[in-house]
Length: 432
Image 1: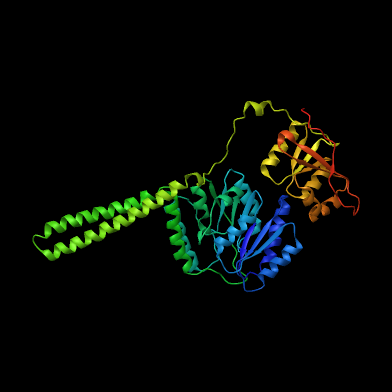
Image 2: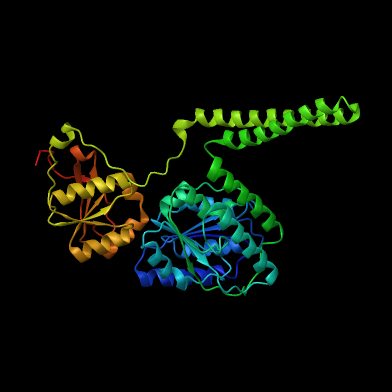
């Protein structure tokens, strides 16, 4: 969860408890990233208190000044590590009870699910302009949502990594995601009246939203070919200039004053055409020069194995007295490779996102825990030591190296306060 907040000291505690209650019912790992966007009350201290009370679940970030919701969300997205990322406003108008419904919709194959506040508890001067704005955005940018402004959204992690936020573009995330080929959906959500604090939005928001809407339209249609836009405008200006020049020359015979006015218009139009064409050409050349750096929204990809890779022998894996393996591996590529290797060695491969889950799975399935954490990291990790106290009999195995040359080292069974050091486990790298 990424939750930006400004002067919301009274709402953070109840909001966090609501989110935590729902995720525990679902059996999901919780991660909340609070971002204090330049608060002048005790919002930051409240965030710190929650982070201190739940250090494994909460991160708190404080901005030096009010940078706006889009940049605050971008900071939170950079620090979010989950496969699914929620955004919520901190004012308690969004209800955490809706979380399971978002996940159900996401499971249908969508990449982004946006909330729709069908019944709003806001004054009419906020609701009416918002509805007009939403209809304009949907028609202009082709993303049919009733409520682009709703802050309650659910994303797959790759969406928030692919979308670049700037200015006031947070309300345009569904449109930006659509440009990259991601599928968007919408569900009706409960909207509560604000009980604490005051709204941070005013009339300026709608003016900024109009220009954001035009920006997204430009990005969708001309991001990779700006010359098509500026060249088209330049062609129109050139046509107007040429027509004015021709008319001016013809009328100069009957009235020099009229002819000079048309010739002046022609000169201005031709100058405008030259400027627009130059802008378009300059941007086109800049994009062409960065062709290899442009982001390509690839959904999935397969690789062709070379004969050498197909014939490469597998490394034998010791049993460590168990037939199930729990992977506590951070790198996704390593995690997939290790899981494949362990399954080939007839292990049941399980994945854990944190030490508590790893030791719980190890206890439940009588499994060995495999990790790619370095020796120094393991020795300094306070969460590891807490998890060890819950399951002291679980075995930890450090695996390293490429899949063709895996090596294994086992951690000894912990004994009270005895320092835990990695001890080499005698494993050979012979072929299976």
